[in-house]
Structures are given as C-alpha cells and as structure tokens.
Image 1 (cartoon, rainbow, N blue to C red):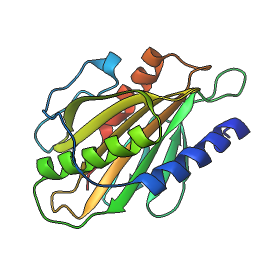
Image 2 (image 1 turned 30 degrees about the vertical axis):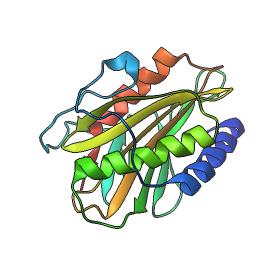
Image 3 (image 1 turned 45 degrees about the vertical axis):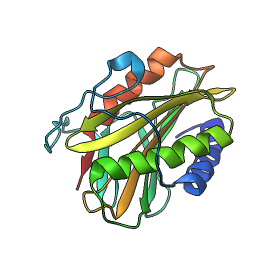
Image 4 (image 1 turned 90 degrees about the vertical axis):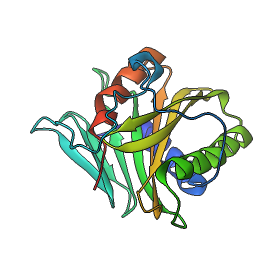
Length: 203
C-alpha cells in the first residue's frame, strides 16, 4: 500500500498532467541517449521489444506499455492513465511515482515533427506553471519511439516529462515522473527512471 502522502501527491500531479496533456513545438531535437545521471533511458533506434524480467509488472494504456519491478505498486487511474509508485522505504514512504498517460491528437505528420510540436506546447505549459530550472534534454529513442525529455523541479519535487506519439500521429503517450526531494536525491530519481523507461513499447 502507498502512503497517504504519496496518494495526495499522485492525485495532484495526475490532475495537472490531465489538464496539461497538450501539443506543439519548441527548440532542440536529436536522438542522443544521455547517460543515467541526466534521467534519460538507454535507447534503441529500431523498433524492438525490450527484454523484461518475467516477474516485472505490466503498466499499460492503449496503445503503449511499460514494466516495473515487482516491488513497485501499480495504480490504474482510468482507461488512459496509470500510476507506478516506487517501493516504500523502512518508514513506509515511497520516494515518488510516475504516470503513464494517453491522449488524442489530430493525426498526420511524421513522428519527429509531431514530437517537436508537442514539445513546444509542453515547454510553454511548464514555463507558465513556473517550473524551476526547466531544461530540455536531448531527445531519446526507446524501442523505436522518439521522446522529448524535459527536466525541472518544484519546491519539493524532482520532475521529468517524456512524451512520444504513435506512428499515425493519432495519440500522444506521456510519461511524467515526480520524486520527493526529502526522500531521494536527483541522482537516485534518475536511477529509478532509467530502470523503468527502457521497457517502454508502443503496441
């Protein structure tokens, strides 16, 4: 079970994410794979199925999935949202969680141009929301899916936002991460992201 603190934070970030799943364009692109301290995943440029341990749990929304280790908690939030909560410490506190979200787009265009478009909207949204130390890190390609990557922080949390689009441009898939500064440092948060994100797969 997750703590009341985790659930409260999860509800807040989920509301923010659902109202802010948007589209549009911004600067900076590429397909580099930053090292683990940047919070980015080791990426494969060709569409492949990731190798996942048999005991890991599936986290899915139509049309994408991730897997998390067996000690994580998976909390469905509806047909288009699911939360994945990192393991609790000895005091019963989880350091944070990620949300996997799906939202509709207009369709058309190629993946690279669509990712650039939605990255622009995300940058505008985060800037308006007052995200601190906001930076766009190099794009990453994970099992054939090109993601933008924004890293920022709030008063109490380390945050990362990744998003890609389906090949037909019909849907956006977003993976948002939110970790408590009081429970984990940035390097530790990056390590948790890097453990899970490479299991991403478009279905």
